[in-house]
Image (cartoon, rainbow, N blue to C red):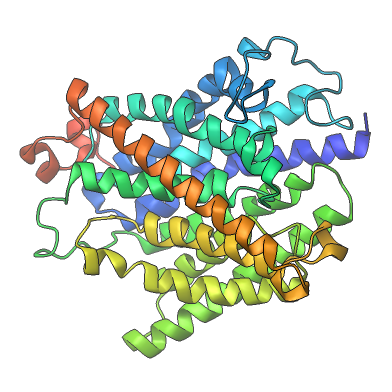
Length: 402
């Protein structure tokens, strides 16, 4: 066991945990004031719910003994055999530390989905869906990529969660908006963010925590972690600039919401590639991520779905671009594998297969889970409750006393 690595990953786990409250602020600022608490609660409650699901069953399904390349076994059910000694996929870290680092990924991923159905879902059914989704979607995806499943064995590159976190949540978000339908008044009434300073604060916390997300995925305090740290920052910076440039060209103004969205788009795009590309590769990925995700948020106006806080456009498309870009810009001197630009076009094909597999599985199973929960519990609040806001109808509170 390596003391420096242990200290580093402890800090990174805490940084990733801090991302979920950051996401809560990022989303809540974009909601209307009558839904600020309901939106915050969607993310914050998952610190409790998702953590329990993970330690009871999720970790075992993700990292237990491989069963057919699809799912892990029950080796670590209820954290059986997971202790302070080295173990699991790492030899340099306490097994418990690896488990809790991965737990923070499991917490934030279903929280990302909540931006799609903000302002119109019942709280209880949302929690029920999240539990089912962690078991039937997130855990298999995590096993496929990092736990010895078919995607990792195929050679797909996903350093910190392009498929496991971002594409999976983006696909689930698309399923959600198709099942729940549009918010009342969508397309005919203005839906204006009520607190953009809150959103910018959340974006800053996300950017800060993302260093733990990506650099920590090196699982050691070494050069790979340093490279992931730098590529993460460069990509985010590039995406802020490219988003604002295209926004200025298209819309006439560079907005604060655009800056926040651009930062997150760049962070999403670099996530699968952070440990496989150089800083200049990250620059290209970030520039592309800002432009692609800016265009992605307009898909909802083309296809007429109500993705309230642009989860599909930023996390779904950003994660997809990042996965494919990894197959283009990966370089052997950094991560041990070359991509298309360095003479290995086969890696881009592998990345493409992983994208199709992720979107197909996550969308279909998420759609089924939403339909099941809707049939049993009813997903959507009533019209009066939606008009009055989720803060009062779901939590008997108000965010502001004015």
